[in-house]
Image (cartoon, rainbow, N blue to C red):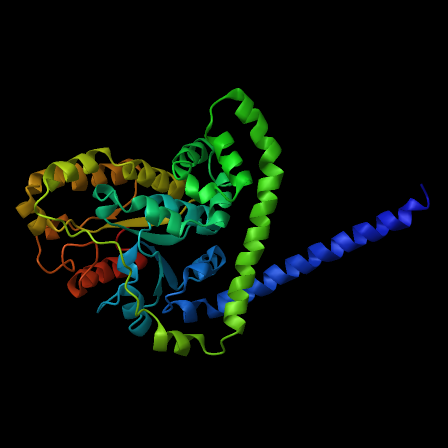
Length: 374
């Protein structure tokens, strides 16, 4: 026994040194992320640089407002919030988080990865009506926006209730393509989603493995941002020259007038699982202690009038339901229903804001940040 003690002491010392080194590395990464996060605001970062660590760094600043949404955040357009408040700040900047095809379930995973950093922080979610009535593209876009680290963070969150995580896991299992290369995550989600006693008993046994994998992925997340920052001395100038020129492809909502879209659209609005996902997202925001605002983009009403979907039907199936959900979860909402038939609020008939639409968004963001919409 005595001969083995030096080896045990050496192992313990090596472990302690490794833990200290990891902790020091994380502290260094967080300091670097906090220092440069404002320089990354104008950047349209590639998918591999989507980073919960960077979003948390933005949240830790009092002069940065996170705006979650989908492709409307990435389309180059006059008066886009991330540009307007960077150049003409009223005390804060807007950090956009989202890209083509982002919907509530992806945003829920984004927020789970940030966790308790959200407590007491203002954030904004831009809700697009196409999330609810365009079905054909949703699965491909979910897979394209999926992050294993964020999925692990949701599956093993200590900030969210088991009930919420159980319902979210059921939704995440719908698209098996995102889980094929990760049997641990797939197994964990199946256990979490199941209500069988045997699953509830097994889930705590996979917890250490899941948390370890989450830790490894979080360290990688920090490291990729550190490498990005250290490899470019002047981030702001670099992204000012080359960023935001790419328009997402494939997310078109232009309809063929030869098909009976009125019945299809109304059926999709009634039965969309996006309503379940949005409610999960709002419930998570409550549990995480965030101070959210919903901005509800309007439907391109003039176009859908011609397709046979009346303004009353749009009100009952979308705007009213969105308001009821926001009220039930005590989340302030600005829904812009009054602009439903405006010819200038949206760009074309898709899900993107025009310059005029962005001016409305900018005003709401400014009032929210300064406490006028609480």
